[in-house]
Image 1 (cartoon, rainbow, N blue to C red):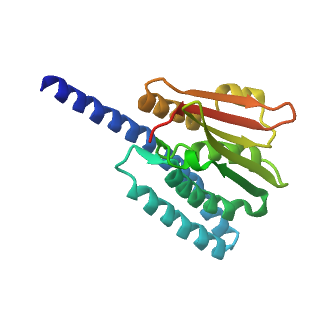
Image 2 (image 1 turned 30 degrees about the vertical axis):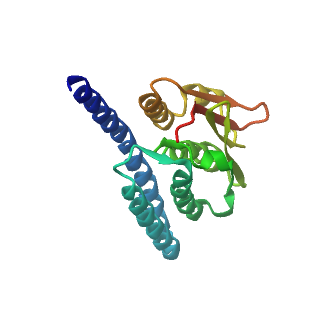
Image 3 (image 1 turned 180 degrees about the vertical axis):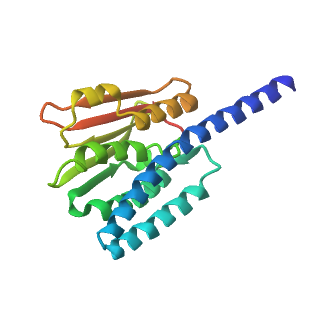
Length: 208
């Protein structure tokens, strides 16, 4: 009985830590979005501002529906990511182009809630936002050797110093949540292509 109780307490502590780490993301994303809405209003682009606000409300409704869960399927994670991307699409229009290629087996794998959003947010910040021309982000996931591998790649002009720093809170939060869920049994690698562009690759055990 004491061992069972101790195990239950460990699970509660782990879930609480995951939830705390997850809450670090929402305020950051909300600040950026509200700032964008304010800018649209100042530019008298009220239709775009209303559209973004509606999408923001939908995003948070969806997010709150899964708020009590520390894990979700990759398929559900993609649904949330698409809501996020629809908000960013209002900001960047044709400058933001995203290609998503997820294997059928990977869709049912369980991952930490909102594991993709900070990675894509970093790609938008460093590959889309600084440029006036169109940019591309690729999201790929597959299962290999009993591990789920997720890659987020952009074609921006990422600088090596930024790559080494791991892009700040987004990546650091991702590492912390993966560590809590998989007890160190994960890999995350950030690399820069010779012809520009940054790839973030995550490898974790398949959890179904």
